[in-house]
Length: 299
Ligand SMILES: Nc1ncnc2c1ncn2[C@@H]1O[C@H](COP(=O)(O)OP(=O)(O)OP(=O)(O)O)[C@@H](O)[C@H]1O
Image 1 (cartoon, helix red, strand yellow):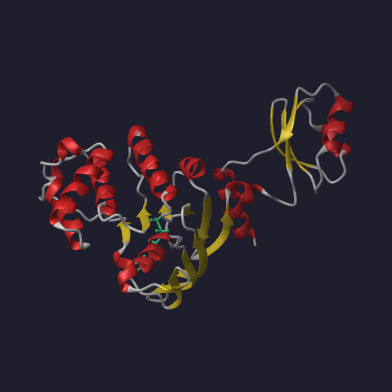
Image 2: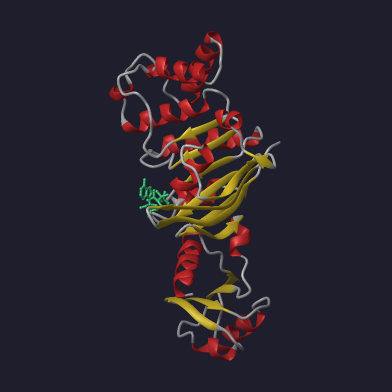
């Protein structure tokens, strides 16, 4: 089992910093969601992994040693700008790409057929790529990334523009590849999807990784939050030492505390009236993303 290490990658375009010492690991068998605002550096980092762009500093390691050209041939890549030949038939395209990666003609044919079936585009194998809808072209693009049975998958916004069924198909394929031991990294702005699908997430901001870990790890904070459905005026929060109101929506109050198990918050609420619900707040990845990006800005 092999993992991908991105180590202190830096890259500038004509003096404009795109990557600034970005470091993270994608382990064998894991789906890693790469998220960040527009222009944060995701595509640049993935292109450097591919070797289509070189870093100014830092390195990419595969299995603990610097990645080689041969290793890179074993990557399945879905570029942001996509890369299919519009006038080529789907079947020819997939077989051609498989042959480029060293498969024999019969193996290329079988693999093209298999991935087209898995991704639901088998009935379009005889059509020119340009005749397919954008979503189906994207399915073909994923088939193109998979057709040589890669050891590593690097996918730039593979889910953008897909309908919910296509999202499910693509998610299933990525999970199946990860379960087979392949490290999978993909970028996305669909944070609910990233939260659902990924084992770990990396948040990049202006070329620096500002948070990396599982969603639960990213949720871990030294200032825990609690949701209380109870007395609506929230004045009771002042009775819990160090607690402060983060949000209020009718009788629902989100409270942040310095540490601990929130019992002082619960006691303060109960002293003011009935409490229907008390639970730890579980911020979504979207909440975490906003928080991390905003607190970096404040810093
Ligand atoms: N070929 C290029 N020439 C000059 N600047 C570039 C080039 N490619 C990217 N940049 C700049 O590098 C920075 C990082 O861009 P990058 O495309 O890596 O971000 P991204 O996170 O993939 O963004 P998005 O989510 O919008 O796709 C941006 O400021 C961008 O304008």
